[in-house]
Image (tube, rainbow, N blue to C red; front, top):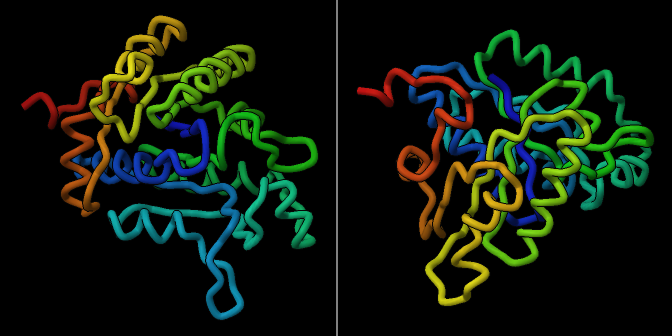
Length: 234
């Protein structure tokens, strides 16, 4: 049970949702790994780059198995960030790190860098990496009219590549009189043919227990992973 998590734009809450699902599944008795292939815009600490996404995930659940393959300080597409830092991103290292993590984890949550078409290296995009891993895709989108069209494009790209999209999660969802925004879940399902498996509101304060509780009440984990989860059936 592995998932490749993508989003419509930076700041959509992809890391939050990925960490929340990972920590929740771990709390339900599964061994879970979190994999960040490439971290760009990394924090600088003692002249070394630190993955802020790994740091956040560890704050939510320090027991999660976490791996990051490349940590780049430049805030740009992975391919350009690597060029800027005179680094070559090697696809075989990304696949090797994923497979190593999978050996010790029942579930591996792979958080992509951006969407499906983000360039990772000279000859590899995010979608190519997902194909190499043979993982299903989960899309996280912020409640916006722009997000609607971007999700439809990602779904079409995934289908063309032979990737299975497990579902769509709408993040930062608020009540509104805007017809487009309040009908976004129904529109996404109708035009993409993909189920909306979660609607998450704006969280005023993020705590490990609070995030897990939000996931349990707002996200359909059984549909996402395609399994019956015993502890949810009690």
